[in-house]
Length: 163
Image 1 (cartoon, rainbow, N blue to C red):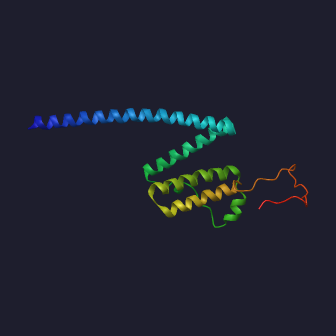
Image 2: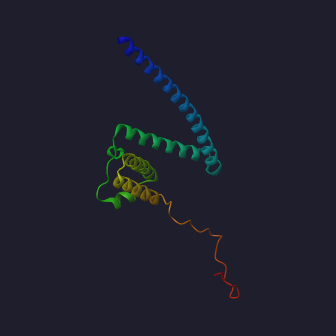
Image 3: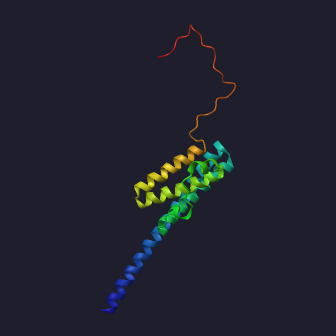
């Protein structure tokens, strides 16, 4: 009877080892593929924005994803680690530097990601609203400034308008 149990345990251990080896091989292939995808994203961003900006964008994104994953695994809210602003929000917002807003954007991204992982729709929406506010403070949604050389030409009374 003990021999039967040890044989069963040995068979289960062999099956688990095979399954672990398959998962390890799949993981290695996925990591190599992810490396090539990151290289392609880096090359595309570097061609458009320069090497430093591309590296900062990819690095910031990966750090944010890692922090969200860590928070989910540890089951802790990333927002617990920061000081929440006082009621006088308008005065504090006018004193924030661009670096402060970028850091807030990183933390709010982690909060929204954590809430998404936990399925908390209210905190997820709040996190996304904070992200939009941070992007607005950075001027992402501001209309582009008109260039001085692009002045309106005098209208021709004989020209026909499309419509």
